[in-house]
Amino acid sequence: MGDMLPARWLSASGAAPTGPSGVAGLRALFPVLSQHIQGHPLAYLDNAATTQMPQPVLDALQHFERHNRANIHRGVHALSQRATDAYDAARAQLKRFVGAGSEHELVFTSGTTESLNLVAHGLSAHAGGSKPLQPGDEIIVSGLEHHANLLPWQRAARESGALLRILLPDAEGHLRAEDLARLLTPRTRVFAVTACANATGERPPFAELLAMAHQAGALTVLDAAQVAAHAVPDISTLPCDFLVFSGHKMYGPMGTGALVGRREALELLAPFRVGGDMVEWVSFTDASYAALPARLEAGTPNVGGAIGMAAAAKFIDAVGRDAIDQHLHALRAQAVQGLSALPGLRVLSTDTLDTAIVSFVTDGAHPHDVGTLLDGQGIAVRTGLHCAQPLLEHLGCGPTTRASFALYNTPEEVERLVAGVAKALELLR
Image (cartoon, rainbow, N blue to C red; front, side, top):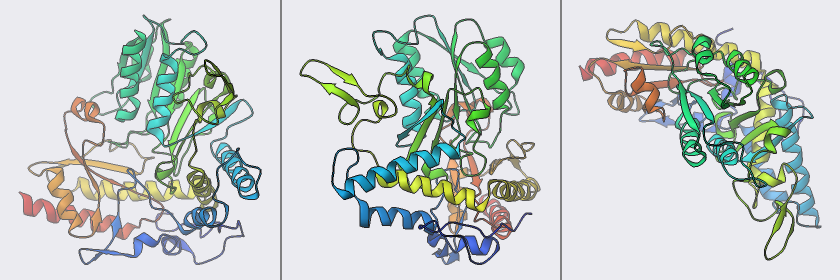
């Protein structure tokens, strides 16, 4: 389909979608895209870091702040009850979005980083007089991970006495099932992997890897941050104990996220924070924690953010996940073809087709310089180590330039990217 998407979206009121067709119609829903940067129309290609928010999400946020802003679960007045109802509805919407069933629960967090810290801390801290991770246990983390899915496990290993083991990718950046098979032992307690590597765009065979770890008796953790905007996994079809994602990477607000997990697995976690709204009773010397999900959601939550995140999920489903996926894959294929033709440029994970990320290195030109020159042409990309230093050093490439696509990007913007990189390389070499 390439350059067209169905023109379907939801208004803040949930009314039937109407409006112009194609990407142009969808782009009109994103106010930030109408601006010019350095005298050029903005080509925003940094979506793996943060996506922009469409008008339906902005409307949902504004409606809450204007009409229903109040604390939840703590008041008998009308605004508090409306806020509580909206917060609960947002949780239900997001559970449907990821295919969570009755055996699952969803915990609101500030994002993927907090979700992963909640899991790693919860398994290595004492809960009810014991902790799931003990000295001599083993934690396996894939070598494709963002620092947010590595550093918490490093700390969990230190605090629990467990051994941290790394499932390294091969020279091309691929994870192999046979390598995981060699790492799994009867002491393996946790396996953590990404659904898409943010630094390279690699899409590992996570379903197969999760199944292997589950069969070995390990708790399984899937970082879905980079696929939530177009290919979020259905957790009901996976042997997955914990799935995490962020709102700001799926057209939602910053500082929002979710941890979805099997209730039995979530019950293992010691609370990361303690305080208000997560207790059944409190005395001066003791307390009893509330049931899930409240037990893991201490303090005043980001109610508006949860509502905005749910509105983003509705927006994605209204446009159509398959349509978005196909559009992004076509843009990525176009970018790979154009960039690979430039002399002295190497694209990472070129044979990974179902991704929205293209990351590359260039001979004789530092990524920061390339990114700066692209910004001068109104093209926004990400440069550096992308919070994945061990992976990029393992691959021997160091910092990269990364372009990443969203449903509002166009083939014309990809052409501008390729031409912009070519021009930058001429100036830098």
